[in-house]
Length: 371
Ligand SMILES: Cc1cc2nc3c(=O)[nH]c(=O)nc-3n(C[C@H](O)[C@H](O)[C@H](O)COP(=O)(O)OP(=O)(O)OC[C@H]3O[C@@H](n4cnc5c(N)ncnc54)[C@H](O)[C@@H]3O)c2cc1C
Image 1 (cartoon, rainbow, N blue to C red):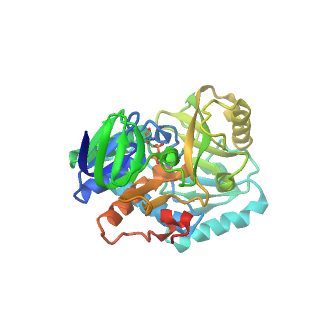
Image 2: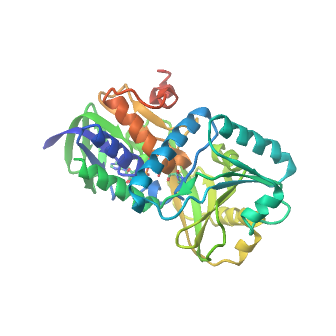
Image 3: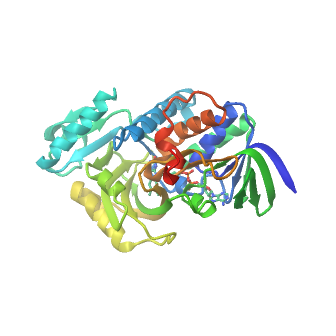
């Protein structure tokens, strides 16, 4: 039996949920087909750091607009926030990193984002568990943290309240012109949005997306151990390296008073097992910056798969080779942050409304030379 809908969304992660919300806000009644349960993919494996990134003007535009959409949503619905903004603290370990820190500050300031440069002494005051001898820091006070497994459910419930529908346990087996073939039957719509995270490439093998495994480690409760999301300045280098393994210092204070320690990156297909050697290197890296982390008890370690594109930008827009198909995937390590701007941009393109952001850097057709 084939059922007809306004729009279909394949995947109920944070990106699919944001697409459902914005399509519903634009007057469509989308059906979300989720193979497992809402939020079961990368969304629940991540850190939930909402951060404005400066790695390219396009990523800045997407992440800063998305952070302001999150702020507006959080202001209206306080239950979304767990705590006050903790901000992001970027740390320069060596003197040689200070020019990079200064250019990061200039990039943000030129685009109107509030930032504060910290001397070595200010850095030590801001985050007392950092080791002595670091060179300086950059505070981005507006960045914050969200608990993504809760946020994705919340977004989906909002979408459902506006007329969207969700079918969990609905695995899409193939996509054809205006049709999604599911294990439970076929669904037709003029618009199909592929938002299946890194698994999008299984349904559309010509989309160059790879699962990029990451580990996180969470400690027991240590009230006040760290106050900001703290990252080493070299984090983006680790994030952009598309070969081998990399680790970077990245810790987050949780509302539960636990400390979340990241982060690692490796390309090992869909092998979700814990790579003990890499976890060791990741924790050692964190201890180099915050020595007393070595004294904390670890409760759990887990892995997740970031959907990685080759040019570090997500795919948001029409996939012309298949009639009716749109893509919202490939957000790598920034999909919690950029989900709302993605949903808004995609929905505006679909209903032919003037989008807030320039869609061209995210056009999926860039990989087939179509734009
Ligand atoms: C270790 C780690 C740390 C991270 N930290 C952060 C962070 O601090 N901040 C940030 O912004 N981002 C972070 N991220 C990235 C973020 O988690 C992802 O970019 C984001 O969750 C991607 O969302 P998504 O909806 O595209 O994919 P997913 O959450 O993977 O959702 C895709 C959904 O599609 C479903 N699906 C797949 N195939 C099918 C099918 N055939 N039929 C139906 N459904 C299907 C899956 O079951 C899944 O629920 C992190 C990721 C990792 C792994």
